Length: 300
Image 1 (cartoon, rainbow, N blue to C red):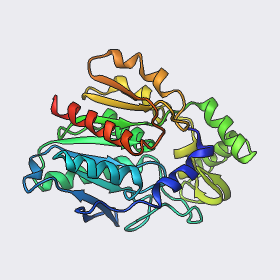
Image 2 (cartoon, rainbow, N blue to C red):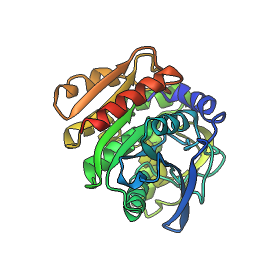
Image 3 (cartoon, rainbow, N blue to C red):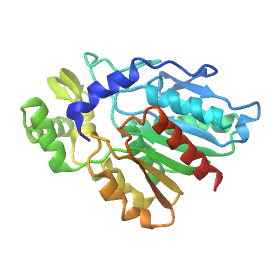
Image 4 (cartoon, one colour):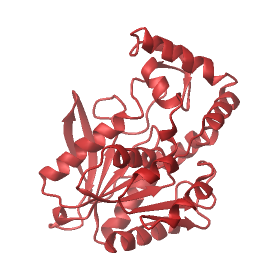
């Protein structure tokens, strides 16, 4: 992902958003933290489904523009949704993550939280879930289905899901922070090996956050070499029907269309390129995205 420009774009897209008019905030407990989510019920029979379970992008939240817009548009089309706030290690978190807050969260924490919310939906009698993720949330959603899965999930919708390569990640980090990434990853891995996984690497540049604090395990989770951070590499491991959206003007996720095109030749993968859309699919592009998603959901 092109981290150099994404943080400012996320701020612009996220801070001005409001919650859907009819959305209900729901909460549950998970590993000593309160998690919260926005539930948009299409009608009184909403547990019959489908319910779209939405996962937001990096350090973002469920009140950002793309998420609230999609929730409202799905509701207009008779589809309920649950947009979750990933805790990122914080209790009852709302809004963008403050870079000054020390980082103890890991990329893979999202998998446990997705599972927890699926359990909550099951407890309400929900019979069918479509898992939708945007940006990094798209990678986390795909990772969950590839390695864990759940019979409740019938389909997967990925909106501009994250791509990754070791070479690009290293070059992007050095361009942004004028610092080599590899020595920092090595330092963090050494700390983990010495039993200091939860100790802080002070004054370190982490994801989009300059000169902050992050634990060794957090740093390795987001910056260490792991091919599973590249969403297209997960696709062959997923048997669920999948719809992947690409914005033709997306300047954030690198190489997604080229990587997904050969994979889309398989029956279980559908690729939709929306001409003119950027990473956040604003305005009429969101309408196109939801219309195509509803068609996909209803076809199964």
